[in-house]
Length: 249
Image (cartoon, rainbow, N blue to C red):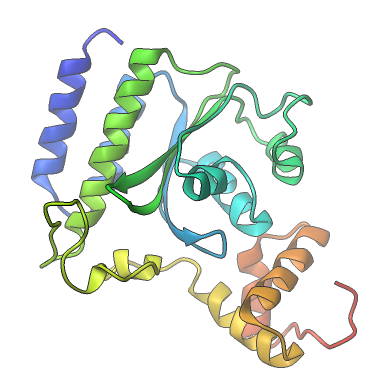
């Protein structure tokens, strides 16, 4: 990267400007300055609770949807393992870390992937993920720049929580301190997966199972029928689809 300092200054200026679209503008700086094709931001509390904040294009959105549907992939690992996850080529058959996700991702134009957790101190709220339409990873200085972008993206998300700040240990002050629900970070924003969580509750009641088991059934149905999980959820909420005890999973 030719001008890391200039990149950081541009990130700082974007962050300082703030606003509801600050996360998007921060990632757009990366798309203009880094050798990546697309990107997305997802807020998470665990693999079962994910909300997309922004995706640069259809491929980025598809990558996010697949990982939520399958509960596996580099974004899930980056969040759960608390570290950056690098994928040289998701289409490489030697990539065996996420068998279901990799098989589905091979149908997209994504090849190289870089996923960074959004964090400060011990607080992790989601991931920033980049994809490339060719194999390969970022150079060390480019990866450092991406890490700085993840820091800026985290702070921009915090800025959406008006009236909240961090303490000296980098933990949120007020009601965020004990909040792990990603909805708490998206106050005032549309939640794309509201219907998924509504459908989970309905399936939980239909089958008399836990919410986690109900979501697993929704995921399995979406996987078997090769449908976006949001489409399946809408059918459940609209009562066009009902799950019955004893049905094949």
